Image (cartoon, rainbow, N blue to C red; front, side):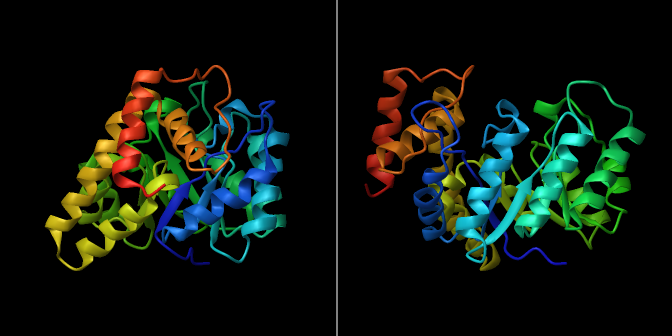
Length: 292
């Protein structure tokens, strides 16, 4: 089974004024993202604050998204969890809803041995009966999946590729070279140009919620050999990212979209609200670069 597309927004989760998952916020958010040329949506991941939600809340989001966006774009459900049972349940839900693929971080918090991690991914693949994308983000999970461990997991034909969210372009290139039949999506937005030049199959990122067209155009520019234009676009994206690192990436993105009339609410505690001085910098960037 092939995963169609290359540029996927790591979808924010809309919350209502009471802090609950807001299915009504899905349509305007999805419409805006897709209007930027993004090929698909990666739901219930890090950007979606999935770790701060119950399994039932995550399923609620996946259901609402499938009801609105199925058939409009490629849908990837992140089902990773601390327990195999929760990940399997979400994988089964994703299959029943018609998702195109599932993805999962390794089981986190406890220091699991590699055999247990392998069994976790096998259980997800069994339950989903869909292409599985490993989500490698060691800075947050604490799971050190070395090149050899990732290549070992990728030997399973049901595992179609990897979302690689780290700064090690050497490791990324080695994986890409040694597993040519798999798909490798880069998840560190500020280095997307470098990964594209290394042969990335695409990207899955947070800032794609707001500026997905930048990454779509970087990909095209690299393919056309227009590196100067690609650098310009990456530079603009990195100006935004520099500000978002001060606001908090998810909080800043939600502020920007709310300001644009796309109701995504605020972040769930323990995330706090950004200070007003930094938000002024974000507002200035938006006024200069986004027509609102």
